[in-house]
Length: 431
Image (cartoon, rainbow, N blue to C red; front, side, top):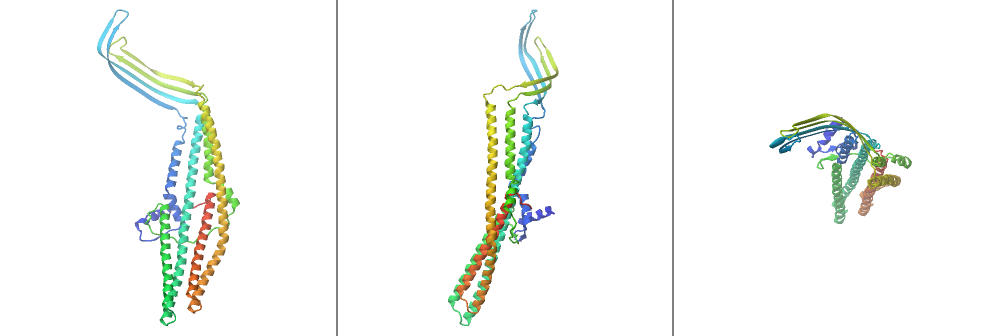
């Protein structure tokens, strides 16, 4: 089912004139499929998985085949102890050497083990970095999606004010036709209506730009036409205690912990270089020397060989010791970075939660205020029809209604954005 959904969404740019209904769930699915950062993170996982092999760590035997075949032309002038003299010009000679060798490390201070463990931790780190990208992408898509909803809600408020302004102009025209209004009232009402229509056009541009940014976030043709119909409803049951606890599950913290483990394993790898290295070798040699002149016309040797080598580091200018100390400092730095990151995330969570609580408290009041301004606008228009209210009072009621609508949609959006950020910090965003 998801496959067909993604195919339909991918075909938007083929029908730019027809608006496609898009839900948040569909947008999230497309974003996870198309996002460049997620694609790069997946490639990093694949690279780390390929490298996470015992052969890369140096734990498997090495097999080497070498061969050399050399032809030469020489002049020979030899005098043997039995009085024989050999003189030959342009004598051809051939030297053929072939060697098959196999080497296996038997012991090197557990460096192979530490390296393999480090490669495993690097693969886990790449997976945590993918989780970071997924959480960030989900948050970005949600925030941008609800920004479009916010702008569309404000557009509806402007349209409602325009409807009232149009009705006001019609009333003035009727009054003017019977001599109960003058051109000044008509001109002022028309100017107010034109100003609202200008605001509507400006708001339409804001929505278009927001949708273009949204499509870019989804990696879809920005010329595609989409239709979003939704409401902004923020959860009201988030608790700061549980959020701070969830921060421990944040993939950024997990990545920092993985980095500590990686640095600790690097210390072991460096320390292992100070221990002896024991290597077993075996192979097969073939040597064949042939000459047209000389004491030995043919010399051929072949056969297996077996050996054991031990390399003991005695002194190298204290380089390894210093490298180990540097690696130990890197472990300390990684731990400090983790603590700093944890502190920063907790601070962000507390600030976001404070904003979340503050906005929710103001939101209830603003909803009531918006309903009151809406009722006031209708009442003022009715009073204007009865010639009890003035055109200035109608204009003030319109302004109050638009301002209240603007504050309401912004507060609703701010509450939802704070909720999304809190869930992102706790790695709780899901499809």
